Amino acid sequence: MFLKRVPVKRKGVSCFYYKIVESYRDEHGKPKHRLVSNLGILTEAEAAEMKRKLQLGKDAGAALRRTEAREAAVSDPEPKRNRPRRLSNKAETKIEQNKLHGQEKQAVAQPWLVSALEYIRENYRNPITRKQLAQSSGVSLEHFSREFRRHTGKTFKAYLTELRIRAAQEQLLSSRSGLVDVALNVGYKDGFYLSRKFKQVVGTAPLFYIKRPKKIASLTYNYSASLLALGVTPSVAVVSGWVSGYFRDVVKEQPRQWYGNVPIRISDAIGPFKPDLIFDYQISEELALELRAIAPLISLPFEQMDWDEQFRFIAEVVGKSGEANDYLNRLESLMVKANRRLDQKLGTRGTAVVVELGMDKCYVFGEKWGRGTHVLYDQLQFAPPQSLLQDGSCKIGYVQTSIENIHAYAADHLFFALPTCAVERANVLTFMNTESWNQLDAAKNKQIYSIDGGCFYGFDPASTKRQLLDIVSLLTKHEK
Image 1 (cartoon, rainbow, N blue to C red):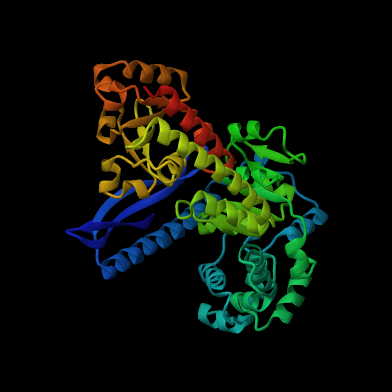
Image 2: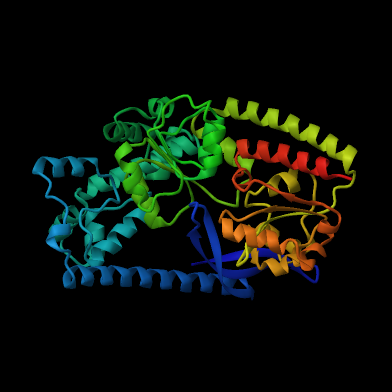
């Protein structure tokens, strides 16, 4: 759980409204937020104190889970017939060689060692010594070294070096900073020393590493589609059915593995393919640690970047900035033509809303959650319904409501996606024939439009292009 703030105005004064939310992934692997509690308007001091309490709760929960796991392992050992076959010494040695920082050899560590590892991961940019950590842990230097290696499979020095080099890889790819700046950012005094250590760990000098072709793993629909739009085929990827079909004829190389949804055990699913680079949303520290044990991880913040900013960022990482500019320029030309056409047919745009219908739950989408809202509100100049603007909901993703309460988010134009379940879809269509639904102004004016949920799911360049064309077609086709 974490604290989320939403900018609001009260009597003309700007302030922040705070909520406690928790993150989870839906059935398609897309990160979502679930409201836990509304806190209201807080001062900076009150917000800071609440963050501290949430972090303490998180740490306590993690400690409890570790204790429960340890007790379960002792009290309820796995039956012999279900245990994996014993690996040979040679195979075990190979696994140890393939492990990177964060991939721990043993499932359970002493509490002092857990704290030491957390301290290293949080402070690797600063000078850290074994002696310093042993003293703060309350153990001898020899015992610290022995337990550290027994638990991680590495010496303290190797662990710290790999942690710093992994961070250097990510910074070189995502920021294109100079070698000196990267060296200082990851805990080295100069670029020459970083270059030497980098070559020892990675096998090539930093400048050659940046230019070297890479096997990519993409763990989100949007980033996979963005890569494909750039002409880059990820070796391992989570790809939606719509995107897979859209790019079927233009994929340049045979992918190793594409998943329709995010695998439950992500690291186990992508690890065997040995990617050189992983793209994902910003994720939990625990999962990020798992993935960084496989390859450098590029994490982009969900909701905080516009779709075209994400596209340009990804293009910069994979060395395709020119291709991204060309794609966006072509898309901009389509936007200009679309607005001219709507100017002729509609004139003033009015309001529009996108909803995902269901009998139990409906979702009303803001401008940062795909579903074509970024096209409607940013490019085509429609306004969200006032109810989405009043409490800042338009900026935080989506609102969950009931199908009977859709009228609270009424707009001049209503775009809807139907459920995938055939039974629920039939029930929704039945409800749409009731008097309650037909009282909506959009229904009375025949300005309700069915959209393809698969196509409208993403906010990558390919999905955005298709959404633009579909929206304009629907609006002009239904215009009286």
